[in-house]
Image (cartoon, rainbow, N blue to C red):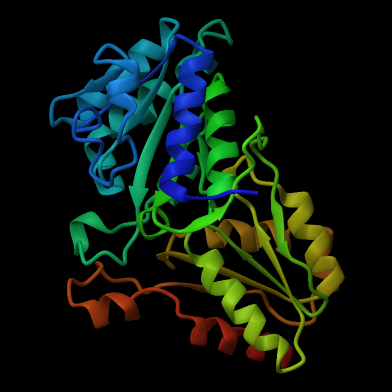
Length: 326
């Protein structure tokens, strides 16, 4: 099977959906002739033209508001926010309008829009361009939140998100754009709300998503040399969350660690820990569930400090040793 990058997988998903459905269109800052700030939409303007690949003003409030308006009137917009940090400017349209309209109209209104959000650190973009804000959106009823970690997941989940009749926040960790992976050439869809077991194991369950999945898998390979078998669960979709897969794994292993890049305080990891603690898995735990997350600081510009602000493979391995020794 062929290998393509995460960015290519996202472009392929959007292009296929635009060919399939004339109501799907792309909008955002510099997504047209320029091909997007990270090159994700290169070539789409040439294929679909300016009516369906629309460059917008530098106003995230306009992008989110126009996408919500277009969605509720029958279109299926895919809107790109250049950096997830800038969703702060778009929150009214997302939280008070897009997330609530279907509910408030008793299901008679639909809001089939996707907001693509390049997120996270690792590119030297400093504090205002490096945040992971997925937990904000998970807190809002009516929004679905997706955070794929591989090219195949990115393509399959984005196609599902575009076809969904609810607003979807689609989180794309920027360091993943150039990562390659096997992606089927034939049509395939990954349903929202279904976790993936990235690695089977028997001793510890690690739940992670996005960029951190790569670090966790690396740590799991290292720990195998120490005789510790780690099962890696990637929820892929944070809302709705596949609690069943997580709980079944924790019941099997008796130990759990949650890893994410976003800051620890108020991070989505707390929700996963609660899902475990409030379920039958609690009675099977042989150690407290640990969270390994970003430091509670703005992301530094200095590359060494930036690296230190997010979980490392060494920190993940240390957490595993800790739960094993309880």
